[in-house]
Image 1 (cartoon, rainbow, N blue to C red):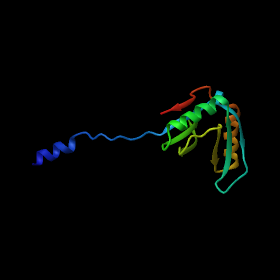
Image 2 (image 1 turned 135 degrees about the horizontal axis):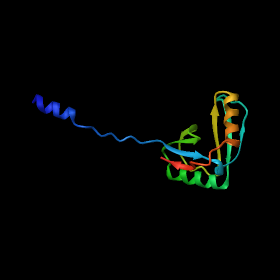
Image 3 (image 1 turned 90 degrees about the vertical axis):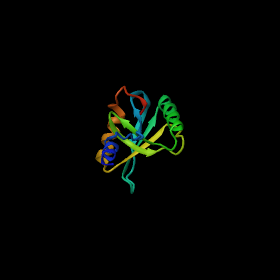
Image 4 (image 1 turned 135 degrees about the vertical axis):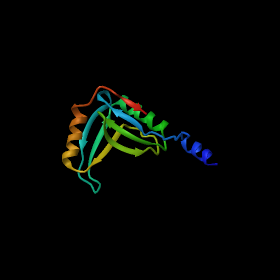
Length: 122
């Protein structure tokens, strides 16, 4: 009996972990960005997507309702949330702890965006 227990413990176990989806913002997807007024949650940065970016983001959110996703810029997380409904219109926002951090994000979104990757990655 002891030999069977050892055999069972040494058998590999498979676990399925759902990876978070990523939507990458890139140069062709961002029209403009702005830092908003401070709120109780922090300093917001608003992003207005181009027509192409807005269309791709709406399709991404439509296809992934109920799943956790991240909006990524140049390898850094801009925002993270669960998608509850499709997001049309191409308006996104992230909230940050300080005005300085928010302004750095705004500058990145205005002029230092990578050309790729663009759009959905998982």
